Amino acid sequence: MRKCFKFAKENSSSLGIVYRPIAKVGLKDASGELFELSMMVDSGADITILSKRIGDIMGVDVEQGEAKVFRGIVGEMIAYVHKIPLFINGKEFETRVAFALSEVPNLLGRLDIFKNFEISFRKEEDFCFSD
Image (cartoon, rainbow, N blue to C red):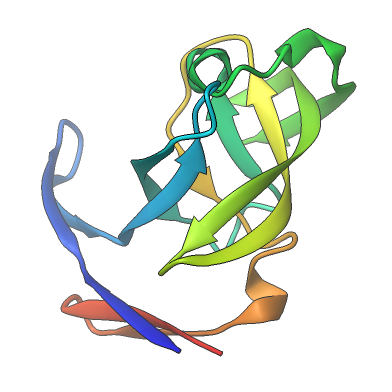
C-alpha cells in the first residue's frame, strides 16, 4: 500500500508561509461511523496527540485513560492515554493516543504508526506512507 499527501501551504504568524505534512486519518465516532481528521505528521512526537474535543466525538471518556505528563516545546501538560483504532488509507491500526484536556494541534506521532510504514518526505511537495 502507498498513500501520498501533498504538503499544506499555510501562513505562520511568526514565519510567514510554511509547508506542513498534513495527512487525512480515519477515526470512529461514538456511533462507530468513520470520520476523517487532518493531522500533522510529526516525526518528533513520541505519541499521537488529540484534544478532548476529538475524544468526545469518538465517545472516549478521556479522563478514564492513563494520565501521563508530556513535555514539548511549550512546556508540560497532562494527557490521558487510550488505545483506539486509527485508519490510514483504509488500513486499521490499534494506536495509543494521548488526549489533552485543552485544544492542541492534531499530531500523528511515531508510536504504533511509524513501525508500520516507510514514510518519505519529498522536498515540500508531498509525503508518502508505504508498507
